[in-house]
Length: 589
Image (cartoon, rainbow, N blue to C red):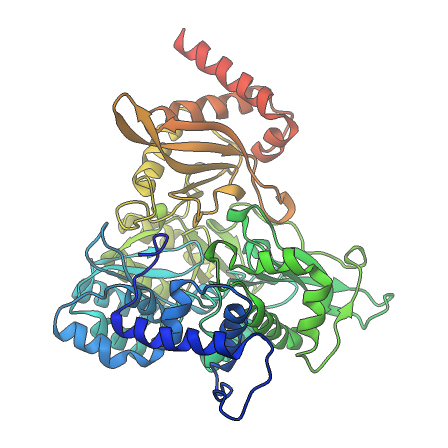
């Protein structure tokens, strides 16, 4: 094992010894002789050429790159079938390669697979959700998780079940192709696209077009590392597009400007808040029709020049840091049939305000007489019975469409206004609601250590315990976002929460207990701020009281109507700690 990475099989090692020797013998930039190896061709040529350049320059490919070179993940169907027949889980780098099919072997936390889907813009139909409930009960653990990319995961899939699951989801019109590993993950889009009274443009056709473009271009798989893309149409419910590798944000341009009036997208690049960066504005306006080719060009530059020798630096942000934005944009423009349209941000009419918890509750649609209902799903956990219940509600009262959000909840759209009360009653009958507290409205938690080997805590259980504690002790009158993440990979994006908790282990005598570093003041969009650490290494059993004191200090000392985000960013860390500690001492007295 190399730096905790996957182990190559003997066959892969033999193949790659010859490959690396050949690359070194050719030399960097040396002219090819008549006996030189043939130049790579086909959809994988761009990846092979990038790997060759890295080795010729003296670099050492990481095990994941060697594994992709030795065996293409999409040529593994027979091998997966043989493993199924033998009731055998993958080993070594095959664990990594299975992720190209959306299959994650999650040992040692669970001796099973997790399957991640690839939903287009978070949209799913009632019959598909009902079908997934059946699959979850027959072949998995009987439940699904909603993820922070508006996606679904099935867990506890046995070694003999992957083929059954893969074929069953395909028969539902769904796919998991490229849902994990070094690929473009599921595309996120405005969750109430097409029904939002405020939106500038419906993003659904664009997420759909790019989704199928990716599926049908094999060269867009096997990137240096994972890649996220989001479309924001300017509506009332955001999609955190500025935390993605590519974010397309809708803007309007008036008739008095130097470009034709209408709706455009500004392209943002390099967002990765777990590494301390939001996406940066490129200064470019794109028509809707230009977004897909622009995304493909950006991805191809990343494929060709992203770091394949250091997984810690193998994200788009680090290529932008090394090259600078202008060089990167010039390389991408060379791959396009059009020139970048440069336009100042200040001359654009930006999106309207975001409703912070607009993803829950009852809200009017742009279509007269219809509303959407945002359903709170506690930490994204959906047992099969609730999946069927939601599908039934969507079909009975709406159009049969359900929309997942990046806050691990979902929206049922197209409800006649006269039926919204009946929908809430039906939700309560299956153990859900559209009227959560301000504490639970955006309570986000990653998988946690019950199913992820990287997590240092049971984030989902802790999130629910926190909510129960705080709801009975603090009466909030404004929405609050609380994000719990189990490791620095930050799947739950703790840096953009009003309160962010990053799991850690805390020494307590001779033992280690689960705990958290506590962050405050994060936000995205109009509240775009990276949260600051307030407390380091707090045992979890002390976290609820600490957060209670923090919220009490906010309620006692805020200005009229001031949000928690604005309050915490108005004060420095030392002042905030002083306020919280004073409240805690008063409570202890």
